[in-house]
Length: 161
Image (cartoon, rainbow, N blue to C red; front, side, top):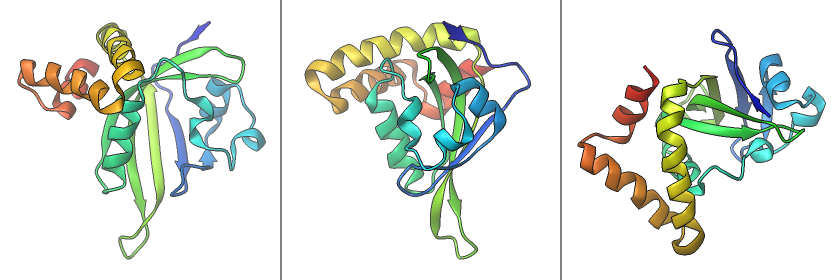
């Protein structure tokens, strides 16, 4: 079953440097169908959906480890094997000295029109990923962006509007 995030809801989570959940709000728990006890300390990929290209997460991790903000569309799976799409913003959490101490993610309802664009793109990326690997999968995305003449962030933000 496909779950839909409410228009004004925000899913919030924090992780440590290894991606283990250190905080999650009630909306996250409700959407993911887990209790707080089941989520805290678990790797954030507990909700990773098999239809998500690994190349998207590689891009995300490469950027947030370098303290760069990332926006992305993500399909997640729930404890009970339901699905839900989100538009996510992931940033580095820094201490007072500017040192990386974890990651902060805020997710909101993905624009349904954006999902119609992203879903076939991710499907194509996954097909390539299975036979040629993560780098080849990411090249599918970068080739499309090059044809459109836009950067990744510009593309992702433009289809959310």
